[in-house]
Image (cartoon, rainbow, N blue to C red; front, side, top):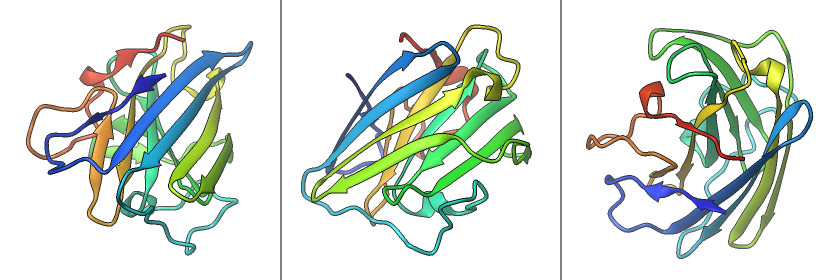
Length: 173
């Protein structure tokens, strides 16, 4: 299990976040576990479960995975909520140019049991822009009503910034 690091903006981490990944013949599979230590999970039922166009899902609890074949754009951003609501974008240029993918779904499950959120994301390799066999990624969670940030490789600045492909790490799965 790889654990996510609390971003420096978190005053006191209230969550423990980890994931492990492996590859199937055609897909990347990420299993995750998020444990709330003192806070409750923060989610909304207003988002649609059968759409990837849930703009604003990140205003509530999500796990976010950014995937690329290099440490640059374009890259895939996928998100999943505790209620199994999904979001996906292809980022052509961070904070400037993006579009929804042509495909309309990815496999995901979420299970919420009291203070533990478990789930799995499965992304087919052909959904990763310019996939060439290498996978660079960063994994994030945004959690709690007070908005705590965790990342596999957090940015060093004061404000969390997820759209930093130069901070992506090659996934060891």
